[in-house]
Length: 120
Image 1 (cartoon, rainbow, N blue to C red):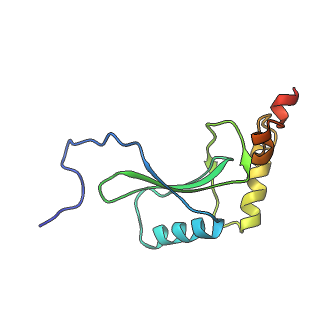
Image 2 (image 1 turned 30 degrees about the vertical axis):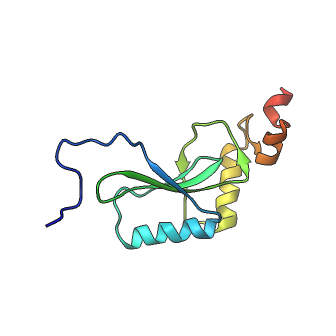
């Protein structure tokens, strides 16, 4: 019989496997699916530059489903991502949380080098 999981004492050298989605709706569907199926260690995170859901597979490997936000902010950043908010609320909370950080800007500005930190 096949038993899920790694043998006792066996470790994994992979930190995580990340899967990218394109929209908040896609990310929300993954979150709802994970919750509905009682997946272990569901951890929704707002990084400012990405919205992520971390969780464990049956073997204990860490997985991430994420999407890029339209923002840039120096990392590491880690706040709780609240899926009780609507899509606009998630975006608003991200701007409020990270907006005072000198590195925070729209990713298009960051790519052009026209972000706040460059004007200090």
